[in-house]
Image (cartoon, rainbow, N blue to C red; front, side):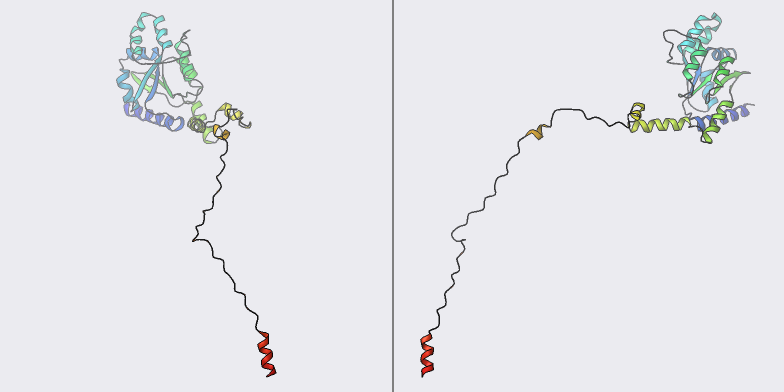
Length: 250
C-alpha cells in the first residue's frame, strides 16, 4: 500500500510540475485542522512531509489561522504549538482577521501564482479549492498523508492550454519577464502610439561657445637663393641682307 501511495503522489507531483510550473522547495500551506489531525494520528509533519514529497519543502501558514486556533477550545492548544513552528505568510487581514478558510482562499487567489500546496481537513475549503486550477490538496486519512489527484478543473485547464485556447502560467510568467526586460508595462502599452515629448532643458553649453576663426595659412617666405631666375630669351639678330645682295651681283 505504501508503494502505491508513493507512485500516486509522484504522478500527481509530475502533473503539477510540468503543467503548472511547481518547483522545489514545495510550499505547503497548512491550517489548524491538518495540525490537529496530525497530532491525533501521531504524524510528525516536519519529518514525514519531505519524505512524502521526495524533496525539499517549506511549511507555512497565516496569522488568521493562528488566531482562529486561539479563539477555539483549549483542546486545540497542541495544534497551535505545531502551527507556530511554521513560516508565517502575509495576508490582507492584518487589521481584521478572518477565518482560516477565507484567509487561505485569498492567499491562493484565482490562479495560485505562488504555487501553494494546501494541507487541510476542512471539507468546505477543499470543495472551494477544487474549483481553482492548479491547487494540489493534501489531507490525512487512516494515519497517512494523501496528495489528492488533480481535480477536474485542473485537467480541463491543461486540456485548454494544449489546444491553444489558454496560455499556461509558465508562459504568462515568461511574457511578463520579457515585458519587464524591455521596459514595457500596461501604461507603456497604452501610450505606445503616442510620441514621447522631449523634456525642455538648458541648451548645451558647448553649443553657446563662439566659433573660433581659423588662422590664415601663411605662405613661407622665399629666400634670395630660392627666387626663381628669370629666363632671358636672347633676341635673334636679323640676317644681314646686304651680304646676300653682294653675292648675287658678283
